[in-house]
Image (tube, rainbow, N blue to C red):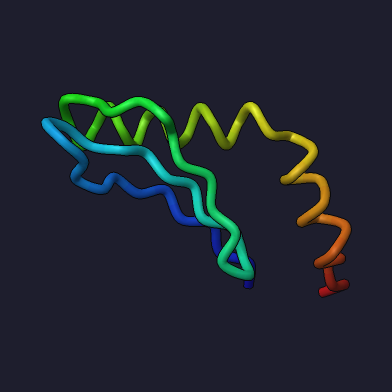
Length: 66
């Protein structure tokens, strides 16, 4: 199973959004957000803005026949 994590880490007066891919590669926002919910939403939007990264995950993990 491939796991992608969306997280919010305290930074300054708010939270920083982070998307973590398999293998430990992560992408963090430059901005901070006032709430955890806003930071997680920003991480989800960042993930959706990287369809090529998601397509690469599909190519590296072909689906199995059931």
